[in-house]
Length: 130
Image (cartoon, rainbow, N blue to C red; front, side, top):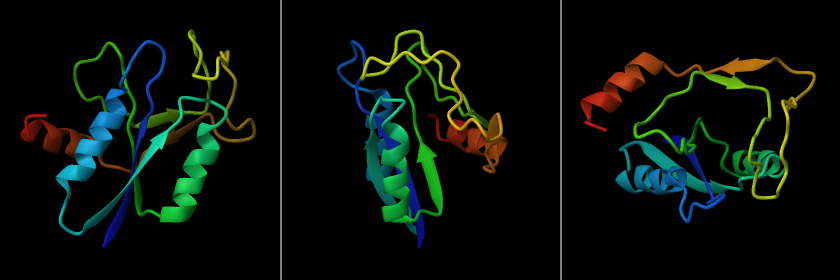
């Protein structure tokens, strides 16, 4: 059975709910034959989120991680193929920290690319009417 860790974020700023967490819960509730889902809410904290994610990965040992985020001004699903090794925020996180273009891992690559077939995934999402 495929083990999938699904993450979303806690509310932040003036939002009483984070759409990423609501979506993560819906994904897990939907279920998929042959997939065992594990759900984890993440803190909106640049400093605490790494440890939380590492703990979840160590506990679950997933085959795949689906990390969801909220894009406040977007009304559709956006797939990201590149993760940038940079912390930057205008408003700050729930701890009040406002990083200014600080690397997450200073000695690592500037970016990581997904190994998920993005175009096929987008087509499947659109096919479902999502």
